[in-house]
Length: 412
Image (cartoon, rainbow, N blue to C red; front, side, top):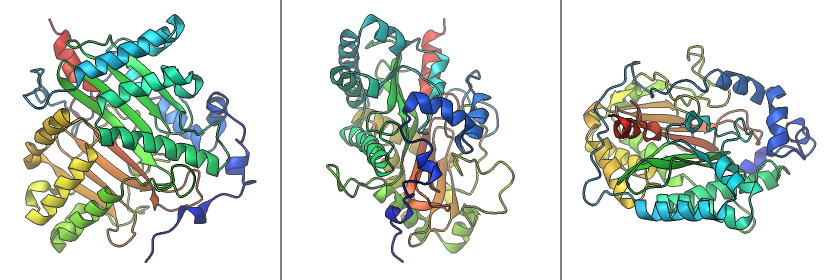
């Protein structure tokens, strides 16, 4: 069975979904979205969750202590701190005093938790890239580039380009464009003290904290609708193809009995799901925006039960999910995750063969990795499709936003 094309699901130009908001920019739509039948209920629900005091995602409601010591990175696992500091200082030097004031927050500020991944701007944190002059916008992106791996930065930029491509497809370029993202700094750039940055908008949210040589880049949300650019100057851009292939390979490598146990729901929109399991925006995702304190019980099968072939595919999925990290922190993160494989669980929803849409979660005391195929938001597919997906990376038990490291640094 061939993969469905996103072009089969384009709204007609006069369809109310797109016609009703045509001409709106981020700020005018931020108000209009509150009354939107799709966005309004999400905004109302998320408003109740922000800002709540941060504790972190857990599996049972109890934060497990001692998982993230502030000890400095091991040799070969160091963050590119000096490059990050240089990029951030250049940004601050270019910005006006008023822009610096809007851009900057305390390192432990609750605004960290204001990020979101929809196209509507629920919280106007920091500066909007599409409102900046090119030099300042490029300087903000240079901070991102200095903090990520080359492939991670390329992925982030491609997701931003896909957002612009989508905006052009549905004739909403003021609302969705390559630069319709917020950027903020937290703390004072330093090679020794904790500080960080945040970039968020439609289908992309990155929260980066560096403490000396240790780096944390979670929560991280990376998604796309559609997953490919098939026309224009960026034609040929594709995202997440290998991760999806390896996830299917993992399922194929499981014995039948383990595969059955890994599948917690057979259908993506399963009537067996309890009330609240499906979210209007997050769908099957559990660890998305404003879920900083959510209790997410382990489900599925323990990774320790997997045969070697399936475990090899799991390693590929994990590596691809953290590939946005620079080489040193990626090695540290890979080691941290693998050291907890004995406490790691894998779960699945949906089919796994051909072009079946699916959801999976890899969860342990130190990581949550999710991928979910979604229904259309600006495309007209009313069932999940492989050309629209969301991915989430979390550090549970209190170290999203590097908060466990910051707390130890600030402790007397």
